[in-house]
Image (cartoon, one colour):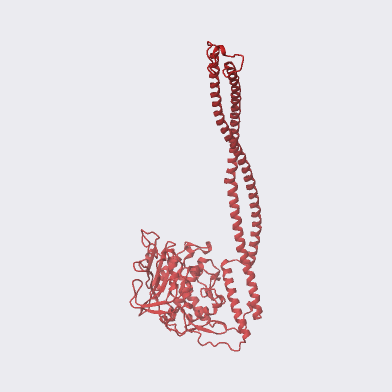
Length: 618
């Protein structure tokens, strides 16, 4: 086995004819993709892993709509080929030559998605053959069972996504406890060039022991998942229980505050309803008076008409009484035949008297109407003043509810909801600790031992301390070249399968320092294999190794003000001409290096430079 580097020539997404490809080319040595957020930088890493056989589906981001195929260009020392895969997943197709864009010549070679021992028509077999690791075997459990090495067993050591580079466990492991033996065996294979073909499965294990072993492995996987999650949370059981107790007490106090604010608000709302009802009643009476006054105006006009009519009757009747006697204008009787003392429709004096009496009655009613109108107008004036007072009270109550009580209630409810959510989260953490204890008890009952006592007779991955020391020195050299604090003391902790720097475990540091030291282990492994002439894919893709510069967890996790970033880029540019390192970062590399490396800057500005990985729709 010898060093046989495989290089990534580029990645692209293509669609139907007329759809411009999203294409990015890489070169040997250092490649840096940097710039604005939300431009597809991390998506590139995910897509590379997807095109190297990853089962995780591509993120459904709006920019990739319309692209139905993804391609990855790979270059060996004497061969160049392109891998194509549907964006929906599934199998692969290999085309000889460079086909990041355009239509490949020929139908290509179909490759299966899953690795299978002895099969050459899989993506894994093609890639392993290119780096000299085909037909290798690694141990998969403590009983000595082995399986055929898959390229996916290597992929996590060479393609590191942002959510993985900060995890609180060794870069060697994925966090899946059931895969721990396999992953450490793969690490051993890369460091030594020796696989586990020589292992023979342990004999003499009863079915009951095999069944218990299988159960223990499942429990170990559950425990590993729980422990990884708890480690990432960075909280112990005592702290979680104390925090839960404090949150419960605060929640009770906030619940009481919420009750008081709600009660005060309900009281103010009740007062506002009463004032509103009173206002509506007064307004209704004012409208009623207005309606009555309108009607009384009409009645007044009728009275005036009646008075004018009666006055005319009275005046004309008086004239008839004082003129010469002539034939009655009503009955036609001659003066001599008229009966003044008897009743007759022509009794003018009676008619005049009746009209006079009616005039007096109408005038009295009109006077009473005038008084009523005056009284109603006074009442309306009083009611208008009262309504103004009521309206002022209503507005004051309404303003108090809207500007004070309602916001207070909203804030109190929001705070209470946050406390409830936080309490539920902390309660979930406490429940996770309970679950860990239950699983440990179940495991102890199956094995007859506690987890700390170890497993009797179990095989351990045989990895020489001298080899691990050499690897630790390789990582130490990197960190020293980069100027990492305390890097003069680095050793490999076999228990954690991780490095210790200046007496402090790598995994116990902040996420920013975990990221850069994770990168050191990945790059250090590649450099170690190159120096020892051992097989390795020959490239490393890292997302956000310099997180400590732009998103540290605190002062102890920050590298701001140090020259590590410049020294990091300068070292990689100078020492990896025959291998490949692809860095995805927000931070730009030093200006002096820009012409010496493969640099791509995403501006997120459609009028300046390259917007992002995918073309901008104009």
